[in-house]
Image (cartoon, rainbow, N blue to C red; front, side, top):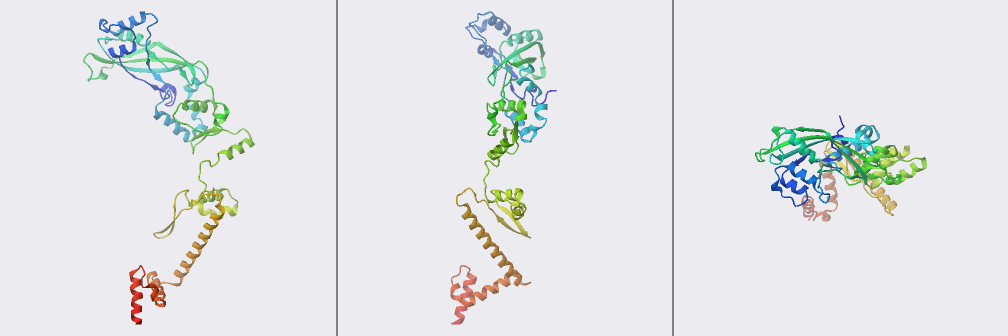
Length: 388
């Protein structure tokens, strides 16, 4: 059984599985000034078209194109993002496609559902087989795959006809019916797939859903030993072949696109710095780049802190010094608060602080007469009035 991602199951290309044969279809696909009313059925029209000289050409019905559904492309991309590009994923999931890329012939199974009319094709297997034999001349297949010509051979001897009555569309005319034509097609590249030059992936490339999709996928299948897939960034890049090249690649690619602020540098120092640096930057382990980090202080109390200052500016040293000063002042402030709370002992914090405020107001009530807190202002004015 073919794998769901392989060519044989129709996941790599879009297979057009439905066809409606009526007089409009015949007019569209046969050129020339033929009088359609003078023909009784499809086979007669097809026979006449075959007998005409070469100046009249059949216009084909494109039965499949190398343009996989977006859903299938997403499956492949997700597989790669899971990190399976370096495992047996490539070898096991694309056996038929790999064979095709190497220029070998592969067989495709086609199952075509056709709706037609008794006036064109009689509803019996003999008539349908004769009609489909003519219909084969209409089919068109992709002429190229990534600029390489494709050879296509319809295996007419494999044709099977199924007439499932339960598939008849009730909305069609009473004389309309449905049949299914099953047959095989052999396709092969005239020249094997050409992998991209080494410098193509010198700079990491993302696998997208454009015309480069098959080229990148083909490179991964046939040249995976020289390529690597970054599962975090979703990029494909060349593997280094020497120590010097590995150093150069790392300097070119490491942390590219990241914003280097205080938090990120602190995280890297904690993970990669010496023992002292790692210990002193341990706090950054809890930070998330670009986001506030909440530190629980016990109970329902928490502090939100965000350190996202960029280190790319020319005045970074000066700004870091100001940050150190700020944090030092914050440390002093917190230690002062802590000492006050120790001094209050078991007294309620509100009562303890209210007494301190009262003592301050009593020393200079005039300075507090217009205070924003009306309780403080009223108390200050009361003290002044009492003195008078």
